[in-house]
Image (cartoon, rainbow over all chains, first blue to last red; front, side):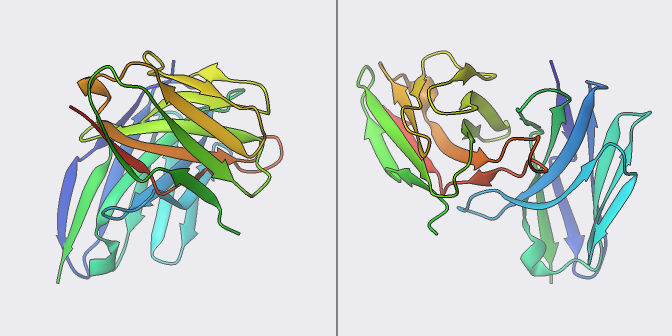
Length: 112
Length: 115
């Protein structure tokens, strides 16, 4: 079955710097890769997603890139702000299934 | 719309007790999921359902049972609670992947402690 690895587990950056979180997946049939943000004590919420027929997707300060050959995808946050502090989860869904397999999460701290 | 709601928000059980967690959604979603979240382990799928009357096992189904008698509700049962089931439980729902991108909408979570 699908396995998703996520790095780093914690990331600290200065406000205004960029942050990058990386994930790798094992099932080459996976075709959908969402990223969820979870603030402390809150529910996970989708922030951006990408399908396997697209290499990059941007939404204001966040972007996701996908390398199908290497089976990895990354979340990029530019001009970080304190409100970006949260736990971020990547996930992958294999073709033909309805299940998401999540990575173990990255705790991002943005210091003012 | 309330979205996805979960009952209860908190619960403390003794080992061996049973309980049922209720998830309800008002978005007319076909698919519903139960996850558990433990520190350092992300979100792990317990069971899921692709429609009323159907259920399927996820990654960590042992010790749990589920039922989907109504489209809007998905129940998670613990027949004999164990300390290893101490966790935060999240319910989620989504449209079928053939109809939408697949975004899952999460409930607020239930914090369960088993002593």
